[in-house]
Length: 218
Image (cartoon, rainbow, N blue to C red; front, side):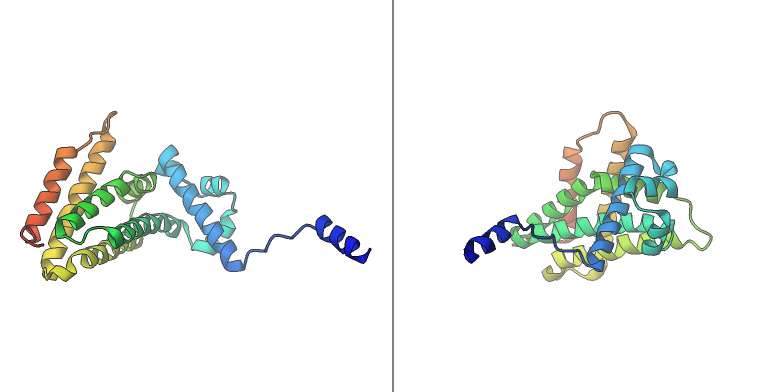
């Protein structure tokens, strides 16, 4: 009889969901705000991405957003950082299982970077970088540049450093490659139909291999 009673209690009880920690709640809030920024920029444009719209779309009060990020510039920078974090993670994950030849790594780098440059989060990045007005001390622009340079430098070093290519050459080719891909991405945003750039991407890959001096590497 007691066993039946205990069984009934177990069946009638509802297990309470685990309460999220403060760190988990903060991370969730941060993600909601960043996604709201990206969605707002892509759908409405940077000019319409005001503090009020970010708060409205994220469902988080502006006071809470300021407490989490600091100011609007820091919110925009967080969206830039997430774009490059996604690119970096995608490249590292792909490189872990990709063939180790220099050509395969160049293909991986160009293809993954191009894919990310055409993602909604990167469209938001382009809007921020191209249209945001610099602050009096140039703070936002400088911080954006730091994120771009630091992230892309590390990716290129990880992929090509072991082939004994000197750091100066890697850095020069990195800048040319990113500038080329960025320019193509911007060009694709200008017209009603997005070009495929298949020939241009293939030519870029060939040139990167050549400029790095890896044409004959195994």
